[in-house]
Length: 132
Image (cartoon, rainbow, N blue to C red; front, side):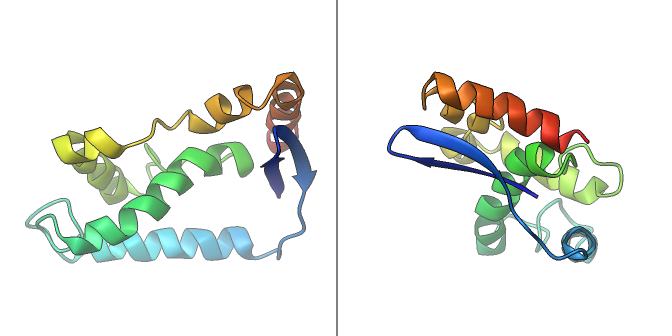
């Protein structure tokens, strides 16, 4: 797994050891979230209607959706294996209150661009390494 670390205006890309089953476990957790969304057919949210449960899941799922494509080469939004999660993202995106606080999914690239020219080469390295 690749990790990007930034400190004091310097960014670097590092290979980080992770358990072999971490991808499987991550996908199992996504499947569990999908199953939880399936329990309430009355709406796209975890309890059918928008609730505190959605607020609790929102930061983690948004960060995963933004970061995992670059780190793991896997997308969460638009993934055919998780259609209810995709519906959840769309329903969240439609809420004006959510639009006011949501960070664009390209935030990693924007963040690295703000770290200086060395970070852009780190970004290119990250994209190359994660596409293998």
